[in-house]
Length: 119
Image 1 (cartoon, helix red, strand yellow):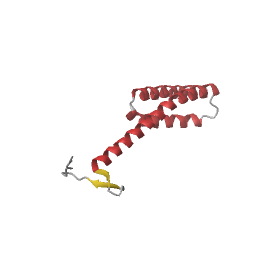
Image 2 (cartoon, helix red, strand yellow; image 1 turned 45 degrees about the vertical axis):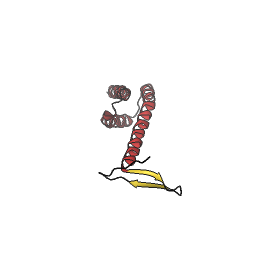
Image 3 (cartoon, helix red, strand yellow; image 1 turned 90 degrees about the vertical axis):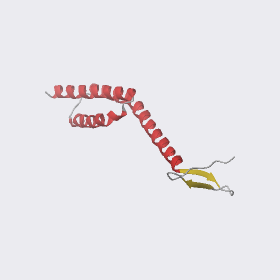
Image 4 (tube, helix red, strand yellow; image 1 turned 135 degrees about the vertical axis):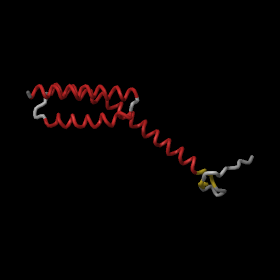
């Protein structure tokens, strides 16, 4: 019974890690939260098993390590997009320029105001 439960659990985690890799390579980041919740629950069950075989754990470790660079790249991409969106918002809401003393000066831009450019 114990070995069957371990084998089923390891099989579920194995399939989940394959699904995670597929989602990451497809860029389907919106599906990762649900997958993370399922992954956490399965790994908690695995932790509760008293003597999981080293062979099964080793196979899961290899797949997990294979997915790690993809997860890290996805996180960098999300951070990059967030930073870019923050920059665009700042540019849209103010104009940064310099005073005649060389100090940075931000001109707030409000809706309806237009900036006149002179040559």
